[in-house]
Image (cartoon, rainbow, N blue to C red; front, top):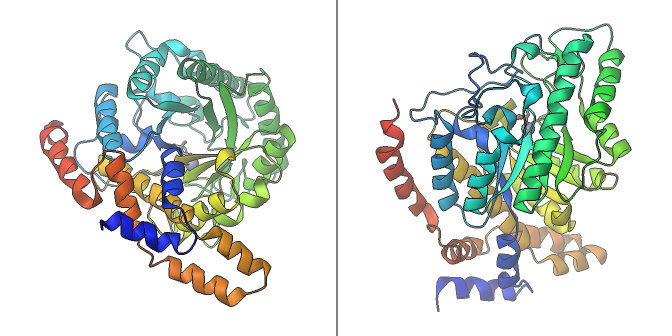
Length: 415
Ligand code: RNT
Ligand code: ZN
């Protein structure tokens, strides 16, 4: 009997069909964030500052310095991750080989090479306007800026990005999720908390005014608790965007690092999805603050994936990653975080859900707790290995050998 068959039988004894779980897992895409590959640098070369209160630490050698290098690194990462996935691009990763334009004038021209590459790789694309790392964002305000000229510039950027997204979605046959995150906020106490929020709502209304077919583009808005330089006030808070998303029936983006440290996304999903059609996740790991560490297979991530599966929410959830670590091999960071997210999903898909529901309904909380705990030591790792085998990617830590070779042959040549 092979290892997978042993696992299959152990799960079958609890009424769990591992084959169904593997099919479901293979059909669940994760959107890899392009910005892990080059420390949120992008290829515009407008100046040195990342800004926006974002911070990447570490100086591991070999970061991607061009679009070609980033694509090569991504191809290596996807080759080590089981399943078909997506790429989440930021507008600052525009391809300017045909000439440079400012952010308010971006069109599909600067992204056609990304679409062509994505098509060849069998990837879907997601997109983000870049409201930071730009001279017009230097004072930390964009869509809520008191100066109408600056607001208009960013509104035009937002509109341009939605049109680009729609074209990506059309060409690739799968809707692009366009996520708007802005850095707007204040370091110290403000007198007026209301004004910037009123301006942000009006700016968003202008950005989203053009109706776009949801089969091509889906809009999401992302809140934040605080950032570097916006410690005392964030215009786009959770309550603000939750309200905006509900009012306009667009997607609410939940980033795992954007809440108080003892809050978890897992408890937010069923509340938010009660009132918005779909959600976007930025699966991340905050350590003491919104530090964007590589995703682990930890309790918060497992609980998040369980909630998506238990609530049957996968069809209304777009799973994306959001972290940036420059202290380890950046390609490995993609592989580790994505594999962990998928492992969390698999664990959730292997739960004896029917049994758990039945005992809960019967008020047998002893059995519920006992089963939750026993599930942790069921042979799920063998089912994961089988998934990797079927998807033709390395089983267990074997992917690391491929990655070390890539580091030696490709990354270390970048000086
Ligand atoms: C910032 C947000 C946002 C960014 C990316 C680069 O706090 O999490 O999602 O990380 O847009
Ligand atoms: Zn995020």
